[in-house]
Amino acid sequence: MKTVAIIPAGGAGKRLKAHVAKQYLFLDHMPVLVHTLKVFQKSKVIDNIILALPPDDLVSVRQELIDKYGLTKVTTIVAGGKKRQDSVNNGLAAINGKCDVVVIHDAVRPFVTQELIIQVVAAAKTTGAASAGVKAKDTIKETKKDNMVAATIPRQNLWLTQTPQAFKFEFLKKAYKTAYDEKFYGTDDASLVERIGKKVKMIEGSYENIKITTREDILIADALMKKGSKINSRNGFGYDSHRFAAGRKLILGGVEITFDKGLQGHSDADALIHAICDALLGAAGCGDIGRHFSDKDPEYKNISSIILLEKVKKIIEAKEFSINNVDTTVIMEMPRIAPYAAQMVSNIAHALDIAETSVNIKAKTNEGMGFTGRNEGVAAFAIATVTERENDGSKA
Image (cartoon, rainbow, N blue to C red; front, side, top):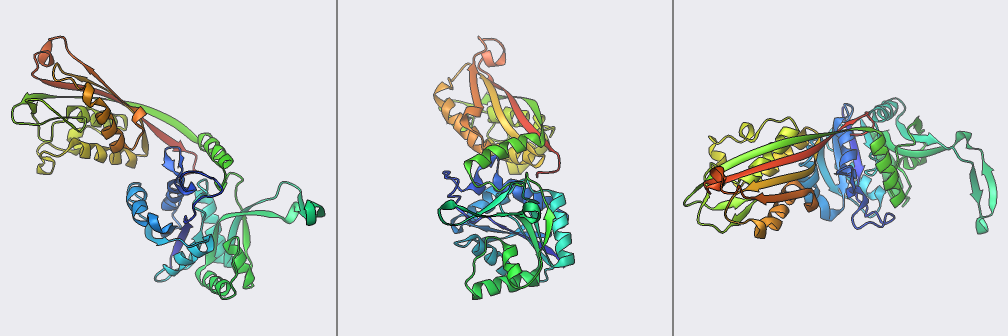
């Protein structure tokens, strides 16, 4: 028997009034959705994840988020519906085989903890239905016409409901069928289960388990992220050089430069990109470019070094590092690279998925000294800064 998590992320985030849906907004260098999914990815009580997305995003999210961040438990992606309840219903329909418990969690609650998931699942296995929540701290007023107070409701038994919510699979299927048969839409899944006469156990969650709905929530989320993490910045240094050779293209920064000679090497011999690769690998403690891409391997014969840079990015991200910035210096007498620098910056930024303002390229001559001064080849230096976040266990 297995436990399946359904993460509805089919909304457009209208209340946030952002230019992108709220689940894709960046929080600490990663989309909110990825933060949420990573918690469930690491959970020992979750066997697989069903993700509901806007129909137009099914392919792109699989490639750009699920595969990129190694979210292997996301085994199924379904199209979301018009409302949240429709998205969850589509997720339920996608469950195949035996399933004991279904956990449902809002995609934009990235501060859910491993402990809370465990507690809610355990309660659902015992009682059949459970929901996270926090006790109301403020006095609750009920109003009627013209916002005039009709009653003050005792708060000692009032809860503010959150997710995750977990249910016996058969209970939830029945609750959803009944709701659709009666054309009922609830504001959460527990309300549907309550309507078929099942009791729901409340599990005390955390006031930090916020749902990102408004612009103010983003500010709170940023503060919570900084509070819960120890920031560890690391620097790496890279160097590479290649001699000029006839009959080769001159490639630097992923740009073909007009010149009568190119650079000799197994790949495209892009010394600038190679230096950046070594700087990034060094910062993350992952060795050097030769360890990962041997110049004896025919797979890398004449390969674009931009492809190698993209592979390096995946290597250091797998180590839980994010890239802050890259600073480089290219040393060569001829030709001048100034006309090509902007395109180099663009290529590097795109490969690393960072802002162009986080990439800097400088060019120097060697005043006629040494092998570069004699125009025998090119040398490149790079420094990269990466950030590792050590979480306190409340985040992915």
